[in-house]
Length: 158
Image 1 (tube, one colour):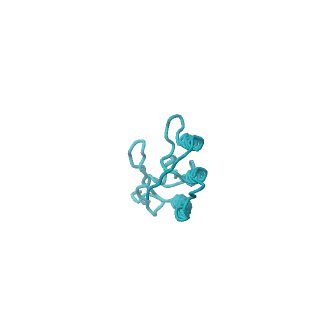
Image 2: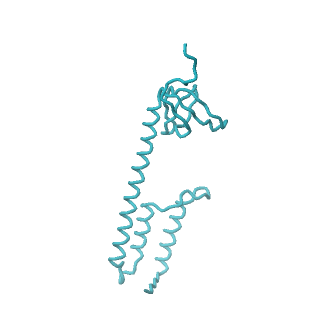
Image 3: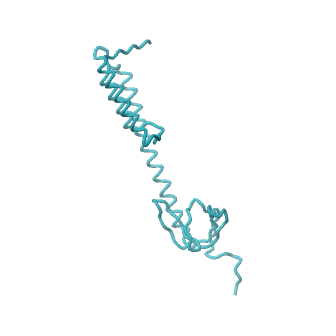
């Protein structure tokens, strides 16, 4: 199928302005801020396409339906991604609370050493749960070992 698109100078100018406007949203201080197109980008491109189509040859029904199906899939995938992110965060929160009073080993990323002790507190920093061991705060992602006992087993029995 051979598609030929011809735009007059006004249509070409509008298209270039839309593309430049879109490209500016991708750059902040000369740096790229995102690598993927989102639903808003898809809608902007669809509107530009509809505005600049040849009125004697409107967009074919099949192509329009296919684009709307893609948009619907994108919307559903975005919702699934949001739901999964929330589930992961909630799982980390529940795990952090379940560690209260338990003996853990945590990898201290600053010193690259294992720290061991009882979890005495759960805190949140930037929405992420952190545990307190020996007065220091660690991410739940840094835990390497958990024990059921509230105290280390090698303490002397009196």
